[in-house]
Length: 159
Image (tube, rainbow, N blue to C red; front, top):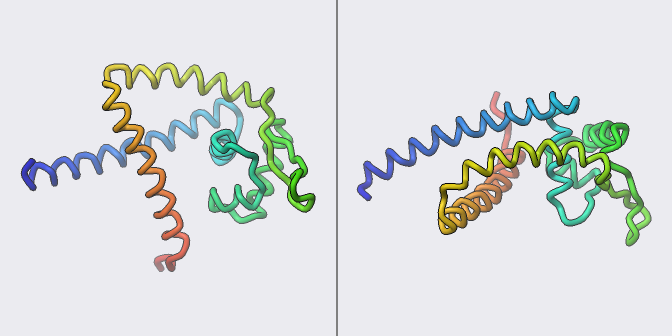
């Protein structure tokens, strides 16, 4: 591929990435509205269910960029809604873990599963090699995003 072709493809990909990210934010808002939750609460539930172990409020704050006070209020809302429970850490009595409540999460999972079937059709015409490439890209994009988030949190804000 010639340099101008690659540059054109990078530009096209950058534009489509911005469009996708904006659509995802709006999609997340629609999901939250449908469930009667705040968009940050939906993302927190997504984070909690993607982790192999429960998180502490501090870990939630670190992952979301919220202050510990805001993360505590987020967990309070989710606990009041029955989506999470605070449980003592078996290994460290001083720590409290935020544990998803499967019975209540079934409400969210049912919606995600229903929407996920539609999203899956988007991938049906890809080969297994293409699916592996997309998965590899998503993992790398996640890792880069984490690095970029950390960078943004540590540089001075513009005036």
